[in-house]
Image (cartoon, rainbow, N blue to C red):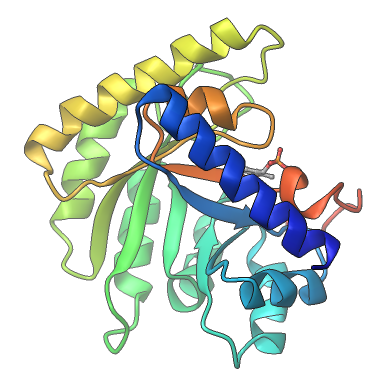
Length: 232
Ligand SMILES: *Cc1c(COP(=O)(O)O)cnc(C)c1O
């Protein structure tokens, strides 16, 4: 097995073990491939990984062209500018970073009729950080209701990136706030099945608190090339 196949295998085993220890179900693994080469994505796809997350629309589209012959589920997880909604609505299966009404309007307008509904997560700024994208906790309900009125959008749940506090117990409280919000919103939206929480350094904690999808980059691919992007 090559290194990346081995890491994928080991990561799935460790997620499985964490879920087992915590009495939780195994979450879905989203492989976060921003700044990673196409060859690594292809190798992971051949190892059975189907869902990949990208942060930048242009970078993702270039990779999609090269990987057009593979069956990949593409998730947009980075901040989405309204003027990129048209391309996002055409080239992704999921958008996890929906955080405002204008974006809901743009995505429903731009999702082509010949594609299945776009899977959508509402991104919540769970720690109320001024610099971060994501809606406030008290705005999530209205956004979910708005998404649910559009037949070409499918409300799947919530996503958050808690502040990277060194004390994991502080992060745990953020995960708990998200789980509580998720359970509360599910009453009105029983189709919600996805709580996207946890990255390379806190996936196990997120699983303990009920994450159903972890987004893992470095623990799977290794360090990213640290380059800046025109697509920001
Ligand atoms: C980059 C990124 C990740 C993956 O982070 P790692 O620490 O490399 O696992 C997950 N979620 C989002 C939104 C990201 O931007």
